[in-house]
Length: 83
Image (cartoon, rainbow, N blue to C red):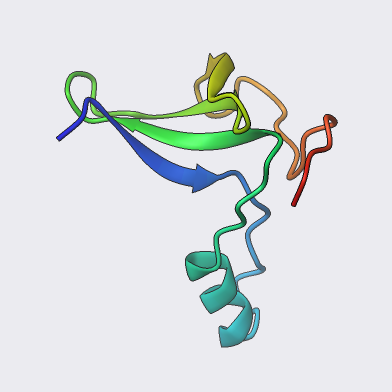
C-alpha cells in the first residue's frame, strides 16, 4: 500500500436532484486526459486528509498542491491536452 491514494480528477458534481444516469457517470466514468489537471489525493499514511494536486498527466509532474477551499480549481485547467 502506498502513502498516497489517487481519488480522481476534480469535476463538477451533478445537482442533488439530477438523474441517476448523471450520478452514475459522475461516479464511475473517469476521464483519462493527457493534460494538466486538478486531482483529489488522499494521504493515508500520516494525516489521513484529502487534498488537491495540480498535475501534468503527460509527465506525472506535480505542479502544486493545496487543501480544499484554498484554490479555485475549475473543472478544466487552462492548459489543454489530448483527451
